[in-house]
Length: 86
Image (tube, rainbow, N blue to C red):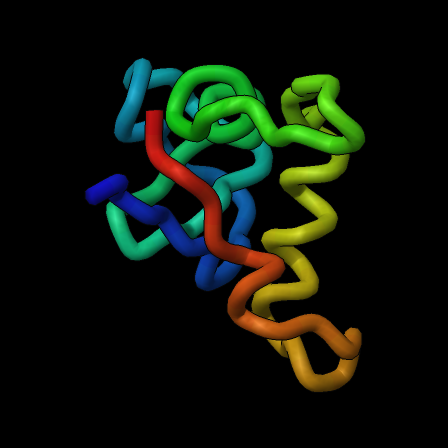
């Protein structure tokens, strides 16, 4: 069984749980607070689209985290905010 990690929110100014860096954009998950780059590049597995794998950019992760604050307003569901952990 694979572990899942869900984005639950966003705030500014904090510390990354993965690398300990001071952060400008904090991505809040059910596992803790991560930086956008660490979340997209190290914490989650690559996504697959039409047989090709890719990783989310830091900008995309920040956008998803901001939308997670009010998902109904943005028309997204919990499945769009859940990823496989690396």
